Every structure is written in C-alpha cells, then in structure tokens.
Image (cartoon, rainbow over all chains, first blue to last red; front, side):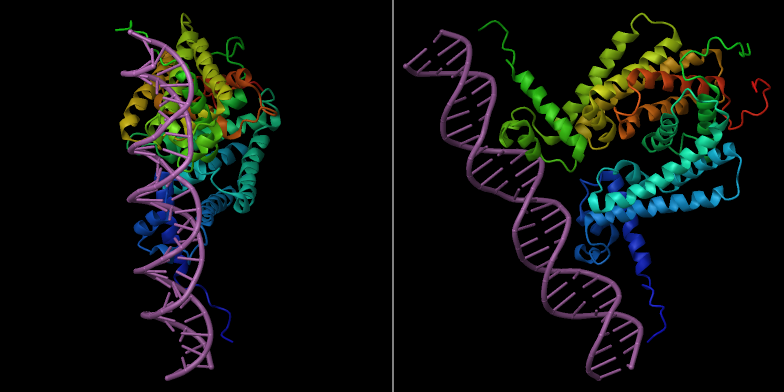
Length: 213
Length: 213
DNA sequence: GTCTTTCTCGAACGAACGTTCGAGAGTTTC
DNA sequence: GAAACTCTCGAACGTTCGTTCGAGAAAGAC
C-alpha cells in the first residue's frame, strides 16, 4: 500500500479556479439568475465536467460561502491573537472585515447578498460559522462596554448597526474615489466608539455641558 | 366623443394587488429565482392574464421599486415640510425610512436587494429617483455639518455609513425582539450625531481631556 | 338589439435550465 | 504490458422558464 499521500494533485487548484469564476458570476447576476452554463463558459470547464467538482448548484454556492467565511474568521483570529485592548480589538475586527471585503469583492458580495439563497442541508452549517463570527464581534463589544458606558443601547442593536455599516460597503465603494480599507476602518471605528459608547442613545446631545465651543 | 373620463375602473386596485403579491415573492425567493407562474398562483390571476398589467418581468420589478421609492420620498417630503432644525430633520429622515421599512418589508427588501437586477431601460429612471433621495440626505448632513464639526470625515462616507445602518435592518430585524421604528430611529440618530459630528474620525478618543471618569 | 372597448385565460412557443450518463482520454500502480 | 484509478466531455433527459396568441366573456355606449 502506497504510503497515505494521495492528495488530489492540482484538482484543488482547479476547484478554486472554478469557485473564483462562479463567485464572479453569482456576484454580478445573482445566484438565482446565474446558470451553470455561464460558469462553464467563463471558467473554460465543460458543463458536465463541472459536476465532477461539485454535485449541485446549491453545493457550489455553499462552497463559495463557506470558504470565504472560513478565510475571514481565520485571518481575524490570527490578528486578534495576543491583543487584549478592547478598542484595538475592535479596530482590528473592522479592519479585517473591510480588507477582506475589498480584496475579494465578488466572494463578499455573494456572502452578503445570497444569504437566503442557500437551502436546508447547507443552511445550518453556514449558520454555525456565522454565529461564531457574530459572537466574536459581540464579545468585543461587551468587553468595550464593561464600564457600562452604553447601557442605554441594546448591545444587539449596536453590533448590528456596525455590521450594517460594514456590509453595506459593497453597494457603494468605488476604489477610485473612496478611502481604502485601513482609512475606512478607522472612520467606522471612530463612528462606533463615539456614537455608541460616549454618546447617549437619544437624538439630542444638547445638555451635558461638556461641549467645547 | 364621450368627455375625457375613461379612467381604468378598479384596474388600478388589481394592479396593486398583483404588485403586492409579486413583491412578496421577489422578496422571499429573489427576483432571478422567482417565476411569473408563482406570481400567478399566489395572486390568483392567470399566467397570461398578468401580462395585461405589465409587459415583462423587468417592468414588473420596475413598477414595484418605483412605487416604493416614490411613496417613501413623498412621505418624507411631507414630514420635512416646515421643519428647519437640522437635527430634527435628520431624525425625521431616519424615522421615515425605518417606518416605511417596517410597514412594507417586502417592498423594501426588493428595493435594497434587487438594485442590480433591474436592466437598462428602467435602470436610469430609478437612478434619478434614488439620486434625489440620496441628495436629500446629503443636504441634511451638510446643514448639520455647517459648523464644520466633522471636517475630518468625508461627507460621502458618513452618509453612506448611515444608509448602511438603515438598509441593513431588513436582514436582522425581528419585531418580537427588536425595538420598533421610532426607538430604532432615535438610536441610529444618536449614533450618527455623536459618532460623526462630535467624535474624531480616528479610533482613539484618548487625549482630549473631556473624559468623564 | 349591435358595436366597441376592456379584461381574462387555456394552450402553446422556443429557449434555457440543472442534472445525468456512458464513453473515453491520461495518469498511476503493479 | 494490463488493471485501476482520476479526470473530461458531448449528447441528451425532463422540466421550467418568459412570453405570445386568439378566442371569448363582461361591461358600457349607442
């Protein structure tokens, strides 16, 4: 028996090639309106040849989403390693998110946009990865919030507002006009820190007397 | 010749009926994956009968989006009428947006989610309505910002972060758990005012000496 | 009554869809 | 060499798609 190093040769690389093209097409047409034939045309792999690499269109979508999410999480965990200061952790979290966004726009769009398109065998698996990611952000917020400065605002709402800011970026970001990931991350961290932690939850900053004229 | 009052009887009402069902289906399946047959089934109008009311699936999507946008804009302009205080105008803007969101979740999801699905004859028309809406928000921000308190942050980025917070809501809002439109609007207004206007754009509030311990 | 306009729908169109199948290349193992 | 894998693809499957067409009901005008 030949050791135990079969390893799928460069099959892995070809899968990634297919996944990349599929992500681009899903991102531009939407999952429902994309056809496997289009992916075949774009990737150069024959229609039936694709099915050697994934068993259904749903599974293809799952692979894209799952790969992207796993990458983000890994890179985030690596960055956070050893960093204890909550504010710095928040900045790193936002930076990681936005950087991945801008380096893999197609994958991120599929991730944000085709959340509902995934169906039940795969839905659950993705949900658990997502939950891990959400929980991590929520944990950072709770540490930040330990001094109780933002008791007026539901932590859930605060964190989801942050996700909204970050995840909406793919709808408007134009590399020629808008700031890069690093600067954008600082801006959003700033908005979040001052808006959620220092401010009151109410609309009027009016009274507190701390205004510098 | 009989006066000039043909008027499409209750045809208008039936169109709205169809639009409502179509919006629900587009919202739950996505535009690309929804079929006219599904809309026929759900609305009770025969497949071919639908084509008396719209000439193509694209036009149907356009009608939904255009109606929703026009409604929002109208209701917003009515609310803002006579209100001059910029902070109050911001609150009204956010309130209007979120209220419409929660009263017409399907339409709003179609609006947010199927932006790219609309094709070229109709794209332009929608773009001009959207631009008007965006410009209005931008105007409110510029007034708010007249004192120059947020010079460090690109107004474009600030406003788009606000849109992100608001438009992401359809992904997470659960009426059983989360605050209603009014409270949410106050929270977001608060985050925006304190985060963007008072705070610095940088991540660390550290130095300014105005910290209350 | 008839004529006209407004509305409805069953049946069908060609095209495109996701997926399968079996034959056959290419490479590796003995 | 043969046998056993790994990979590729043309052709076809049954289904569903968006849209059209022509016949006819319903309602209003004269």
